[in-house]
Amino acid sequence: MKFLRPICQLAGCLLLILLATKKVRNVIISVRSPLSKIPGPWYATLTTMHLRWGFATGNVWKMAEAAHKQYGPIVRLGPRQVWVADKECMKQILVSIDLPKVAMYAEISRDRHNPDNANHYGTEIDLMEDLHKVALDIMGECSFGKSFGQINPDKKAEVGVEDHIWKSIPRAIFAGLAKRYQNVYLKRLFRTLGINIEFDWPVQMITAIDHIVQRRRVNSEDSRPDLLQHMITEGKNPADDTRMSTRQIVDQMSEVLLAGTETTSGTIACLFLEVVRNPDVKAKLLASLPILKPDDPIITSKEIRNTEQYKYLNACIQENLRLHPIASEMGRRTGNEWVSLGGHEFPPHTVVSASYRALHRNSKYWPQPLRFWPERWLEGDDRDGAPEPELVLPSLTSSMNAYFPFSAGKHSCIGINFAWAEMRMVAANFLTRFDLEEVIGQDVDFRQFITMQFKTGSWKVTVKPRAEIIQDFPSWLALTEAAGSL
Image (cartoon, rainbow, N blue to C red; front, side):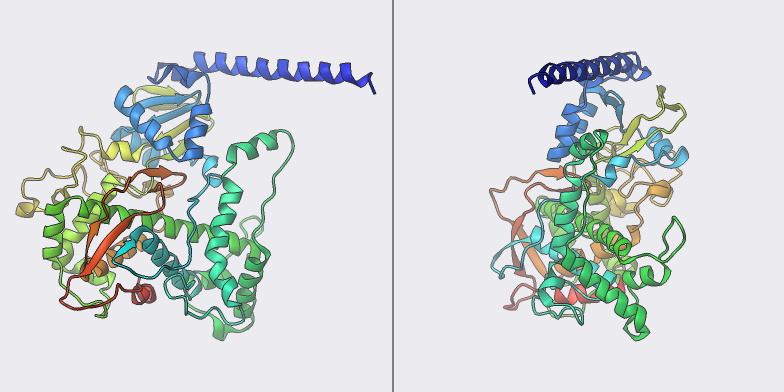
């Protein structure tokens, strides 16, 4: 076997030479690229290692934000990776030219903080955890016609499905997505070597959802007006227009559950964070809302949307979405043609990220950009000296638009109306019943894999009823069961 050693050594040397040659070639192309005219750190032309680390740790948004502050609204952070925070360019990226999404969003990891079983209520609660559970059960009600028992552990599971299996579905989905996506760059490396890392959902989860699907297909009396029923009845395989399989339905439902819980729970938590850290806003907001007992009827989204009493709450939500958009940025890419943006020429297959957060915090468009100032969104004398916002909200084609909380164009958030309804209902029904204070000493930071979330997955507050009664903190059960009104 000794004769093989020189051959292996030679093969290894040739492989290293090929890899080094490819790297040098890529660097030369990057340096000569028209993107070299775009400002950015010196190492941006050489490597994407810093970006990979940023995506893996959820801190890439910090890199982009710091780069915008140092280099301006258009900045190059990689050989073919550019971030844009200019409102005119943003309109082109999202609406006019309508650049397609980058493929990486199909592989990026989700939040690693999965839902746990409910804790008993105390004066001090983890509001972030509770909001996540509420969002999960709301999505359960609307997607499967039944909650997952995150809020009410005594809630019965689907007929014919074991209780522990039904309640484990959210954890299985989030753990499965993390397993599938969190090593995105490692998967790509193996793929280039001809090795494809396969993924599948837990067998028990597939079996449980398949049981529901088959029961509804056989017995129409078991059908319900929920998302699962829509997929069973209307869902088609885009490849051949055949009926969706259980596996395809599970994939679609998992993505919906992920999007519907991670986005709204994190955004509502940021709203409460801004309210408690701005005492004047909090006092004005609570004074504008009615005082209810925990067991009073649930306030509906329609009532909140159309009643004058809730206009300041709606303004607070809009301002929160400015400071804390669902995602700090969203990647797009140029196609096979060159694209002109902001006086720069972008070659084909360039990643162009729309920096929502940086745009929303740009003093050029938003006076006192870091101030939580809900009055921006009111009208006339109610604005109380606040500047008018840089848009009329429905006018996504306006050249004055500098506000993209749910993106824009055909790739905008498909669940925007659902998200608005859920944010309004949760915020209104909580703040009409309870006052809250932040537990001191917490280090609040954020991370982004797909959406912006609290980095630790936790945020603790103390709560007390606004009505003069002695009452335990609500289980949120009535609110999740009212999800059908969304």
